[in-house]
Length: 308
Ligand SMILES: Cc1cc2nc3c(=O)[nH]c(=O)nc-3n(C[C@H](O)[C@H](O)[C@H](O)COP(=O)(O)OP(=O)(O)OC[C@H]3O[C@@H](n4cnc5c(N)ncnc54)[C@H](O)[C@@H]3O)c2cc1C
Image: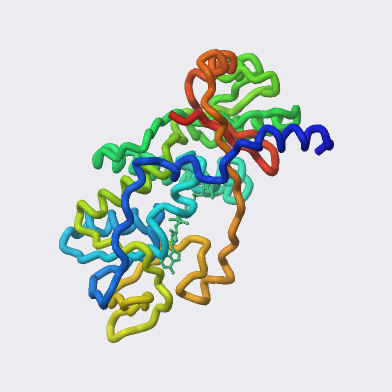
């Protein structure tokens, strides 16, 4: 970056606060008390992000009699689940292009499973009245370079060949009818495959639903060690152990309690920046009426959205 541009960006960030916008919210729930003493349960879930909470929720819904305990080392949602971009995508392959490239023979099935999964997420959010600003807006992959436009055209042709519905190619004029940026040369619109949501409200909502279903949640309770114990497993925490018939780990990029999993975990960094609220005039000048998520097609890509 040129020195002037660096000075400019440093200046424009000088008032920025290094906190997650989503987590810095008065609606943040109070943490549940830590575990003190030993506990027994049928299923122990380790980790209070989407993976752990959704596992606990489904386990309880499938068998309400199952005794489920969840332990979280910090506070539910403090990590990736509470601070992500809130793009809730059907794609199981981190985007259609990646899926087409790596699993061309199975892409139809992968897309169908992903669509079913997103429908099930929406259904759960609705059934439990989780207020997470869920909006099924879709997403547009935008081209800002001519070669990216050719790629989008190619991917669209592939979706047609494979009979994958829901994708539309937007030429420059139609793209600017959706979002009026002079840098956008065209786009590929996925109408149904992406929803926008408030990530922290989703994780807090899942926690509340789990508690309502009888999941026993202990926060500030890191699992330190996992070992066999009789026919089940014991997980040691600073102030007590949990004996469980089954254990589910939802610990994402943190060092796994199963050591042989650790070499397969690669943390990937990602940055999120929130602007100050746009004025009505600013918003109108961008013409972003349908609130879709947007992502550019660069290798180190940018993605952007509107908050509520
Ligand atoms: C800035 C950013 C933007 C992103 N944007 C998007 C996006 O727009 N769309 C999208 O789909 N994905 C996005 N992601 C990725 C997405 O947020 C994650 O894939 C997802 O939240 C992972 O959920 P998780 O429950 O598996 O893990 P996490 O949310 O990381 O939760 C794991 C939890 O386990 C706990 N834990 C770990 N070890 C232990 C232990 N030993 N004992 C007890 N607790 C433990 C941690 O404290 C943590 O709370 C983004 C991520 C980031 C960081």
